[in-house]
Image 1 (cartoon, rainbow, N blue to C red):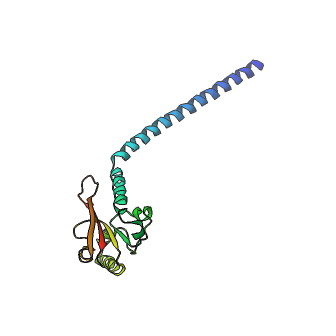
Image 2: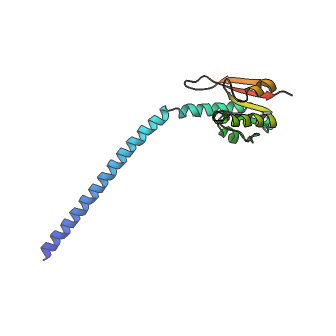
Image 3: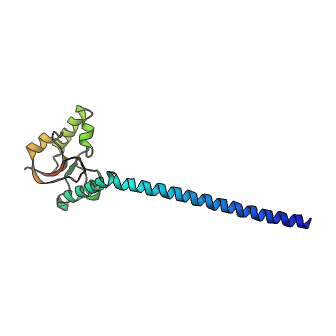
Length: 168
């Protein structure tokens, strides 16, 4: 009875050791595979346009910062990333303050609302990601003058940031 009990105890200990080894082995395999996937994803993240977008965002912040802080009470960021408003503590003067061109492509009615809003609010400055044929191009040409411009950091598309100030 005692030798059978001792053998049973040895068997249980060996079984526990084996289970522990299997658990550790599975954990190491999981960590190795997950780690490999994380490294692969990280490589893709570095290669994808997000790095271009980050550079462009930094450029938009830097470019818009040309407007003196005390004059940032009436600035429309047209076609820029919305975070520019937050990072530079700018309250948008118009209710359509982001994605104006994109939303305007869907209906002429919305494009008309954007134009009406800009005509009504008359922002002192307009900082825009300029493109030919913008919804507000007529307003800009008639009521604003160029203060500064620079090419946008991009991989393929040619574009420019333009800072306009309202004529008085």
